[in-house]
Amino acid sequence: YLCHPQLLQLLNSNNSDSHGSVVCFGASIHTADGQRMRDMLGVTSFPFMALLSVKSSGSSSGNGNSNNNNVRSVPMELLLRMEGPQLVKIPPAQITTYLNTTITRQAEVLAVEEARRLQREEEQHLRREQDREFQETLLADQMREIARQEAAEQERREQEEREEEERLKKAKEESRLEDARAMLESAGEPPAGSKGVARMRFAFPNGKKVDRRFHSVDTIETVRSFLIVHFHEQGIEMKNFGLSTNFPRKAFNEEEGKLTLEEAGLAPQAVIMVQDLDS
View 1 (cartoon, one colour):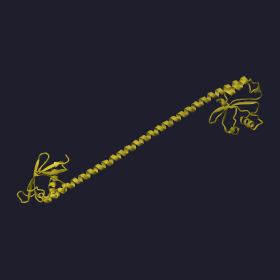
View 2: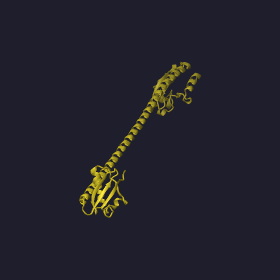
View 3: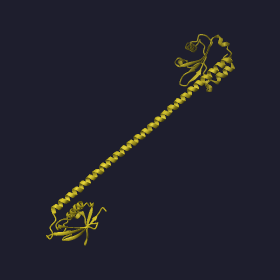
């Protein structure tokens, strides 16, 4: 009966060996497998035929399960049940129709479930991609924020260094001015016509000239102190300057600051050319 060609063709075409979805199982109730299957399905009359949908990691359908040691733990859905003596009276073609209709209907259900599974996987994949892109964007934002903070910290340090440098420069200028004033106050300007006087005429880069009397024993450093105070009082920005004479042609650097005007050949009178060394 089960070897009817039409029924065999249906089962063979849907067999798992031919990439189908049906696994066939048959057993006598006088065997342990048959008894377990009878008890599981509540069979009371024979012969018995059923089509089961086995729910596992890979969904499949069939009229049995070869792994009967775990059959009770595998979730199954009963799709078709035929039993009793009248079963043998049903033509094989009709049974084939019942089976084929049920298998086709279940295949459609499985196809829908598979489509849903694929859709869920696609949605999960999309969420993972979105999460990855979000994390990458978040990391990029964090890196930009770290870079911005580092740049701001670098700018703050550089600003502090510039301010400290400016403060030290200003303090140095103030100290230089105070030292120059103290030296001038200590030396004083001798009265006109007194002895030991060196008359100086300073010629500036802008063409202006200034006359001033010094003691011939005053040093070139005293002359520099006068110019420092003069530039400050007149609002002239000339911090680094040089001194020289044209006749005879000679330049006086800061290392010669201890020379007296007489020793430097600038007494009793001289014309001093003042050069702005920063221009």
